[in-house]
Length: 75
Image (tube, rainbow, N blue to C red; front, side, top):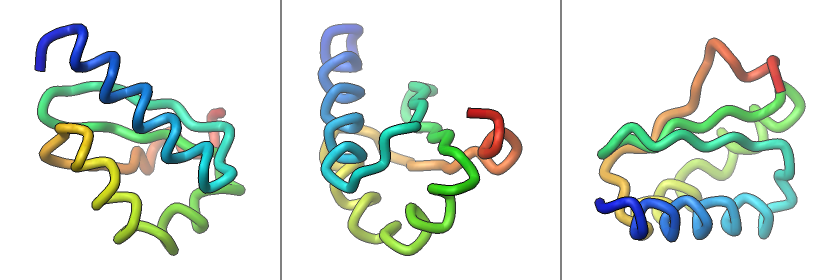
């Protein structure tokens, strides 16, 4: 992805989380991986909806979707 398509993909990914009412999310582009950090309070929620999120997030152009286990309570 070039920088413009990366910004578009990240904006779309942010929108996906907003639609699910997950506000405290940080996204990191590690082409082709999208790394996700969420608060501990939202961690279980994103696991519960992981199938839907992966489908939506992969449609933005990322090949792999990863949840950052180490930083999930740092937000």
